[in-house]
Amino acid sequence: MTTRYRFPLLAAGFFGLTGVALGALGAHALATTLAERGMAHAWDTGARYHVFHAVALLGTAAWLRAANTGPVNRILWAVRCWCVGTLLFSGSLYGLALGGPRWLGPVTPLGGLALMGGWLFVIAAALAKEE
Figure 1 (spheres, rainbow, N blue to C red):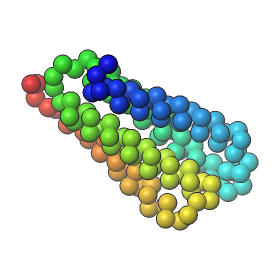
Figure 2 (cartoon, one colour; figure 1 turned 60 degrees about the vertical axis):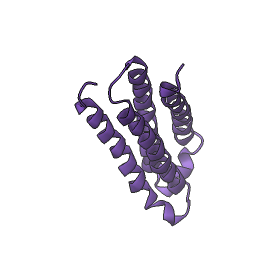
Figure 3 (cartoon, rainbow, N blue to C red; figure 1 turned 135 degrees about the vertical axis):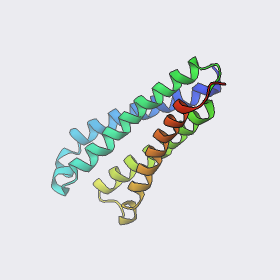
């Protein structure tokens, strides 16, 4: 396995595993706490984006494995953006939902920007000329 698609595949597995686990934690063990704080929706949003981007990372790993040439660097930048974005976006929502410090609030949109940046790199890869 080349490192070109190993990192996206590992990231997909990590974020898939942790996204499902944290989603279940929020739906079961933390359900009462999140409801009392009025933060169940924030937790659900974090978990949903967490898992969505795990699936996107899995897709990029497949894309990189199949690609002999092409916009590999753009796809790798999408992977990096999605990893950072998931950590910042979902992580800050989880922290806020559990009563974390207020400085986490501005972190959420930064994570969202990183997630959107990843999707822009996918668009750039799709529009790249064949090499």
